Image (cartoon, rainbow, N blue to C red):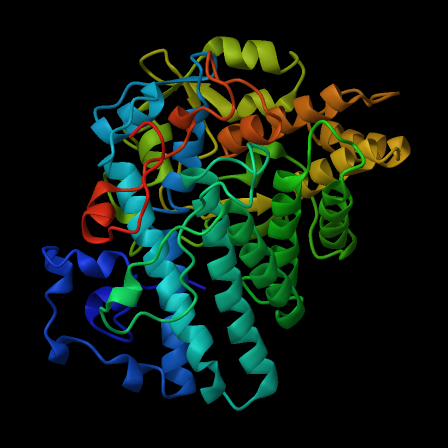
Length: 464
């Protein structure tokens, strides 16, 4: 499905988040009623609800979320000088890379705003799904809205709060939980931050419900296996790296196994062919659809803009450190072929060279890696070895005869490099980032100052 930016043309629901609505100085909020269709009209028919749901997917596409920042902010924050160098001119990204962000960092701000915009659209769909009479169609629409809300909250809490393992999840502050549509501005809209534990619980609830409601196949939209894949990530994020008996490893492995065992997905034979595709392939469990009307059309946004410098494509803002490839991969690893040297002699990440290609968010390979780690920690070394050799075989590497946890984590690093996992991997495994501990305030995005200016109940993160 090719998504259109229907909201920018005044078609469908005008939905803004509880927190961004306060910014009345924003010109986007100065919309006369006749320029848009009110929510009472837009959501009163199944067609209107479908239009709103497409709008929720459209929110995910942009550079603020999965089109760029969910990937790039993770990689820049986790960079210690051994993996990549930010050489671009955008101040917001430079602050992220240098771990020297300010409270009004532009990238932290626009990601927050877009995330709550997406959540509010999803909330409107959830609240009005009863207008759909057909049960199967109603379940699918509700499942998709819950899926969108769940994954956005998951990534919000991972960026704007301390990780699960850092302190008490019942007292550490997460992000505000807004679960009802925002239709007017009242004091009640000044939402406080929920705890990390409460946000994770909501994410799991949303994704679990989505898993039961969504069909096994749903075109390019979220299906039941996409919900399981994200649940696998969530449970892995909660698992204690110092306790192999943590039941969250069992849960992560079970969700990953559900995706693998479905038979709906398979690994692409050639690693390079996994990326830069204008349509989804059999390895994509969930991908962001791109076209000329979406994020890809922007000359100053999109993953290809920042990672690529090839034949007039990209700005070449992210330089890959040659030592990263040399120290991470063996000489015969076919995954090294995804990297290329541009005309300036700088090493580049070739996973994003086509600005109009779909962006894989979760691939089947990650499910094998999660199942392998969960199996190993639970003592099922045979399963762990088989899964790791499945990944190694695609990379044309010699199968291992025995496997260790370090082998599994190294394969994760090789396979998923520069796909937006770096920060979250460091935090869940409690690893340092350069000289910074995994729970350093410098590795957490600031609550945007503009949001705190209009909502006195939003407490700022330490260090800002």
